[in-house]
Image 1 (spheres, rainbow, N blue to C red):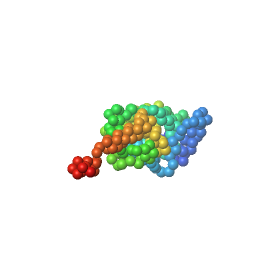
Image 2: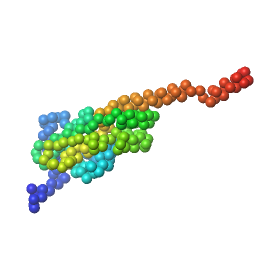
Image 3: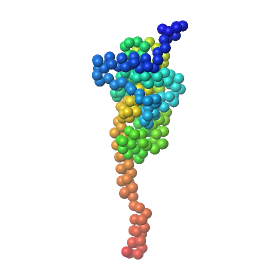
Length: 238
């Protein structure tokens, strides 16, 4: 405790050193841990990571609390973060020696949203590479991030917990993990579909099937030129 009852000031350098020490200890127990390492000043550089963070910050429920996690994730305090189907399990370095444990669970994408997304994706996404790189029409980009029908979760679809003593609705450790998810998506966008419990390959398949059906329908239709030639034959007998 510092002067006047305020917490003792800890510099960024000290925080990073403490995080590095805690990470080294964890690696001795589990060499396969997956820390979140932020390189540079930006929390995310690619479309999926940026879109995830922007979605979180766009909700009033989160806007005043999510920022608490920025400094934590930037200082490499998220020592381990694992994404499995619909869940995130993480360890975050806090004020105590032992890291805090954070769990984030997301509701699976509803059938209504899935149907809406796949319907509007028709003819817009033609390859998995295009989807991963976030290269699709602007109208589709809006669809992914739409608060009502988009892929990205609303606060009502995100549930979290932390074993720290902070009784706030969203502690800084949870906030750091939410930003950590954005960092993961920055490096591996396919994890987004894992966390939302949907099959990205099914999305591509449905799009391609719809495109093929459309091509077959067009192929079976007689063109105006074909009709004109038939009429000419009937009239002139040629």
